[in-house]
Image (cartoon, rainbow, N blue to C red; front, side, top):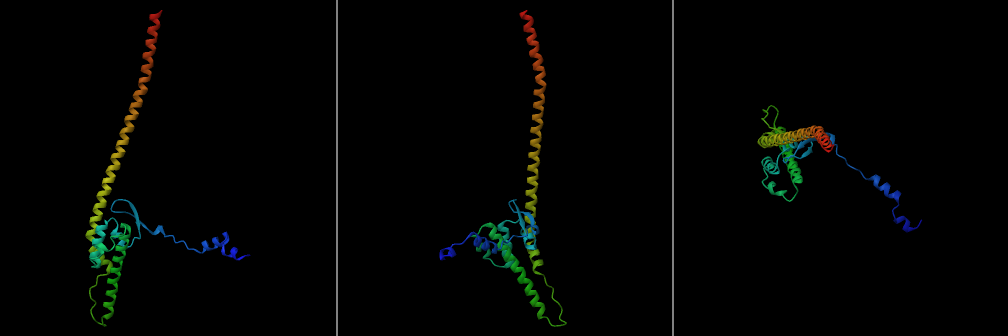
Length: 198
């Protein structure tokens, strides 16, 4: 075997290298199906943040993220990204704020001495749920309205198709009824002309 043969990868070495690569496939069975703010179908992980953000516009997500994190720069920080990437980053920042709140609660509890009264604490998820409630309600109302409009549009389309089918059937029946009458009239005309000729 020459040096050139060793340097040129063969089909066997290419296949071996390809089998060493790992393909990551998400478990889509675990995803929750939802609709975006514009009505297209989407999927999310089903965690409290993703569930709350479902159906929100990117502006609503930005406002909510600013409220939850307290970081005013978030409104412009991800503006150079596409909407999906903005939403993903803002959602992750919200998740980070929730984890930070939970960690602060744990640290506060560790500082307590034995016998001290336990302070009232709100978990990160509970705080997020409280803050996100008006945003979630607005998104739910918008989605309900959008679904009602889509349903009305589908019903109107079905009614139109039904009316068109009925009109086509009636036209076909009228045409079918005309044929024997027309044939009878032509036969009578032919007989009359035959009588006139004789």
